[in-house]
Image (cartoon, rainbow, N blue to C red):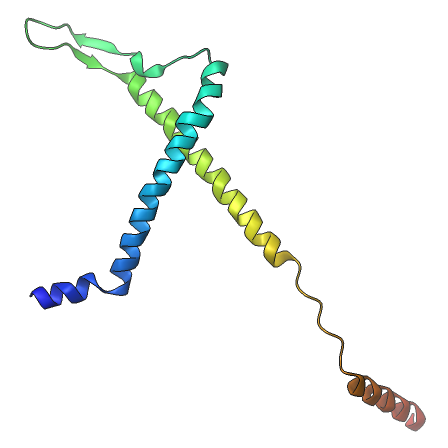
Length: 133
């Protein structure tokens, strides 16, 4: 059973998937930093520093040691806004990468000119065709 597990774990697709997950986690940190540290400060200035996460509706007041029951709809809105910003940031990154990739493929190299012998043979062929016709 141990040998079978080792064969399974060392299969190429499992290792590739593990590498993808690790890189994805690191990329997630980069995107989160982009959103939190680069995009959110100017956006916060635009909306006057509004933080939706503090908005809530109290369903039941705190009684004794029991905490209040709240419906934190603002937290949901904040997470939704964060999601949209993260999705947009990823879209922009992927779009930029695709443009760079297309730039490298846009200019196909012109085919090299045919060898001199081939050009001469084509001229001879054309002259023979004219003289027969």
